Image (cartoon, rainbow, N blue to C red; front, side, top):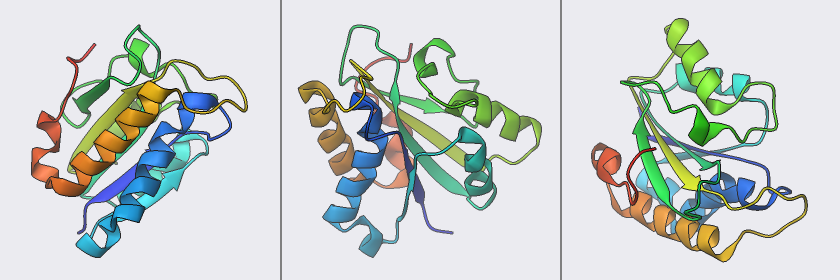
Length: 162
């Protein structure tokens, strides 16, 4: 099965659009012609469980909570470890990505491989543009994902895990 990449977020909430924009940049680079399947997800996290169930190899890109390093890219192997709660407390929905992953784990519906790329946000203001640091990180991550195989993705962290 092809590598699937899901960009999560909300384009109307500043840096929260980082995941969606990363997928759009991958699409513009021609990632689908390389066999990648790209998805944009802006709804409730629970809807991701269906994507998890239909995937063997999945990457999720999303904004993470601010901690003083806007644009910092962090990587977590969600198949092997529980995600850090504080980093992913930025969802505007009932279930955030961390809670969705843990529910899918309990239901045995995680893909064989699940890598989370978090781009640290600076702000989640309504109708705000991406901050320059986050915009640069989106471009960097899209290029890295385009150039690298999925097997190398869990070594791409630009910042240590929180």
